[in-house]
Image (cartoon, rainbow, N blue to C red; front, side):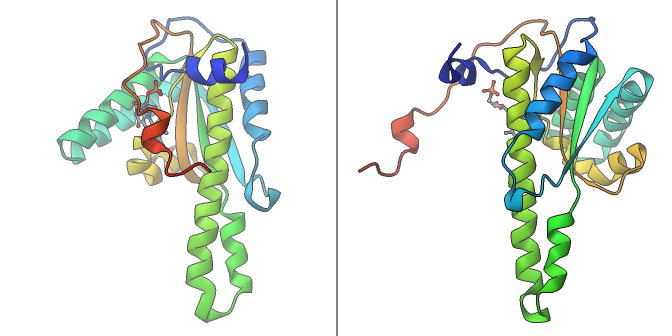
Amino acid sequence: MNFLELAGKRRSVRFFEDREVDKELILNVLEAGNLAPSAHNKQSWKFYVISGEKKNKLAELIGELSDNFPRKSRTLLRMAGKSIYSAPVVIAVFSTGELVREAEDFGEDMKREIERFFMDMEIQSASAAVQNMLLQATELGLGAVWLGIVNLVAEKIQNFLQTNHKLLAMIPIGYPVRINQSPKKKSLKDVLIEIS
Ligand SMILES: Cc1cc2nc3c(=O)[nH]c(=O)nc-3n(C[C@H](O)[C@H](O)[C@H](O)COP(=O)(O)O)c2cc1C
């Protein structure tokens, strides 16, 4: 499979077979994440691999918390909880904030602006790690989905996992029950502003 084929083959997979995934494969996926580019080469991400009873409790917590939200977010949060429950393994991706903290070195007049900028950089860096992991999972014949909706309850999840790092996304991983057809995507010409 060349890279474009791999990128095209990746689908969001939300439900999984009741089958364990070898630790070696998960380590492989994590390695791919850790190879991503990062702002200032900080690699200011942390990965938390959750499985078994802890994972199921987390899924329940997200399901319960969904009740506090309006319909659309509630539905997405519930679905996220179900995907987490269904997957044998979930990788939670966090940003450490170590780049954001470097804004301290700037004067008061610029600090806020630089903080926001560094926060953007940390989010972009951790996102690159997430995408690498999704692609590596695909390459290994696994399915996965990028869950961003869990950020609505980030603090509660951080408390549950007892970490101060900032949650970016969760990635349930496992063997797909089925692989959906691609949702309709914009063509390249729809998104290309100019090529000269
Ligand atoms: C930043 C981001 C956040 C996402 N959050 C969720 C989510 O919370 N729940 C979910 O089911 N899918 C989520 N997705 C997956 C998208 O719904 C999916 O990528 C999109 O529908 C295209 O389908 P595909 O991944 O199969 O190409 C997210 C994707 C991205 C990039």
